Length: 336
Ligand code: KG4
Ligand code: ZN
Image: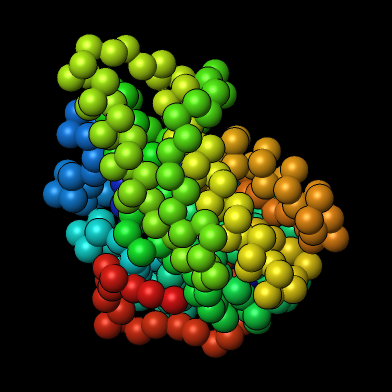
């Protein structure tokens, strides 16, 4: 057909996902198998367990993605895969599957950066206009990215220690919330008040960088100190205070970035983009400070890791002429 169909793979962490994407912005299928239940009892992702699950799942998920999309291998134009950043054993499962299908069916192979995937999830809800800014907030990364042309990423600010999602998961654990704790912390935060006034690191520094480790320590120390003296702290207020601090710094730095990098669109991407507190506060601030800038939040199911976002980014990469050979390898520490 005259439409471009890309079979796209995501297996960088604890979700095995395969999607069929038409023309970079239409989802024909997006099958996501999460392993969260297997990792919960360990309090985080166990790499060996993750790669074994990917191996067990991937063949079924490929079949499911093709069947759901009503597509055969013959209908495909290309295969795309996340090759980094992520866990090497997990990445290798997707990379190997994608390479095998590309080779067996004589299809081009498109390598995709996982973070580019998160950003291009926005292509499912809007027509992107360059240059745009992206606030990338996930379990592994917290960055402000200036995208001045298709697939051309400039990281203008980033965390110097923990990622925002990582901080959510760590403080959530202190409150007895299972991994990944972000969503439940968000719900709990809405039932409490910002009474603890936790530190907002680097807020008034003239740069676009973040730091969340001081906030995490302040939270942990507060809870431990209360335990020692036998105080019972309000969990909802703790969550609300933590969330207020995270949201304040994310918004402060994003506003600074918008001042120095005029754009028509602000994209919020990655797992933490699902955060309701962040969405509400950002919408409110933007309406006052930058009402002319379009706010783009991908739908919740496209904020976490998924194959669809990989297909959207692959569409952009392929148009640039980017393809890989059978020597494509996983690159766990891949940057933009
Ligand atoms: O993008 P993602 O699925 O995986 C990575 O590439 O890291 O992000 C996962 C992270 C986890 O740390 C999780 O706790 C966090 O996103 N997260 C949230 C929310 N939903 C997921 N954090 C805050 N609020 C949420 N509603
Ligand atoms: Zn991710």
